[in-house]
Length: 431
Ligand SMILES: [Zn+2]
Image (cartoon, rainbow, N blue to C red; front, side, top):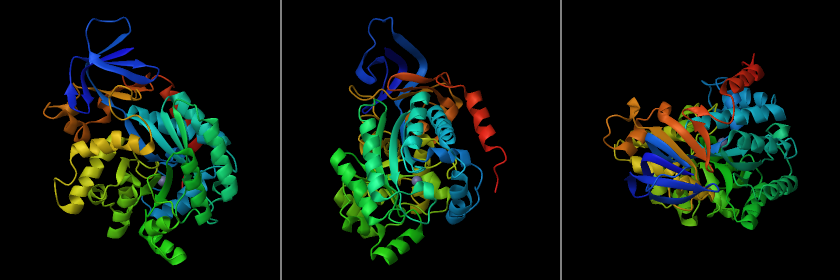
């Protein structure tokens, strides 16, 4: 198959009169259009971009959207997250995942990291998320959580030995999947014991993968880690020996200068969720400082009830605007950087060969309608995509070469049916 857009975005800029040939889920060539072929898919009036990568999400939380919108973090956690997540059985978890994946695809996210922690002492629920990702057609990084703080609901919790065994089993079960990767995810310095964090790191080491961990989202976390472990979160993780190139720290809002430098020096990465941090009133991650320190970064939306949108394009815009406000500087984070953090940089951080339209990369692509009002006038298209584009401009999406959105409609699921099922499950839910 070849896609023939009017324009396509390569690492060197916009190109026209080029075709993207796709074979076995990968970009086989970016070549001159030449003579027409039977399998060509013409995309007149469309620009082809790399799909965006959502580096951090909790898909079941989409079902909780709207329940606790004007609460602070603790109110949200204790009145919404903990009690309502208890209402979801395996089918509910699968529906929440399908719902979130469907919304993400329509907004141009072709990969989602689901940091998943409703384990019920097994992998059945995680398998339900994986099945949903396959059915809807998104690429999934299942960040299989490892949680043992006894303040959290029992279904989240496991012993380090049980969690480690189950994570290894899930990784082995999906080692050869084309669109699913399983990675370990000890919850956080406050949600996982030192033994649990080290178990997650050991799995990442032996599997040569990354591991995900929430770090310093709220100000209270640093104080708590300091009190309980005698060090602030990044120093504590360094002391455990896990701060290194395998670590993807989520949020990292409350780091001091030395912690930022330490993350850079150790080669650690950041999954940055500016929209969620704003929604919950967490604070502002010092993104330009972290980039300058050498920290690798990908953007994420976080869960659907702490944002409350699921668009990485939106996070590109948000991360740039937020740094301008913080630094009183309109040049604080340019569009090209923001776009990179939501595509190539995020994919590289996760170990995926995606995020750029280059031969050999995974064929995860997004087409946008060049005639859409939000992309006029045609001055600088990349900046317009980051700062101005409406999600309605996204017309088509391919994941692993499969067209999962066609002319703004999901090809894999009935949207009306999905909406009906979501509303049937959540009817009557309120605080
Ligand atoms: Zn999270």
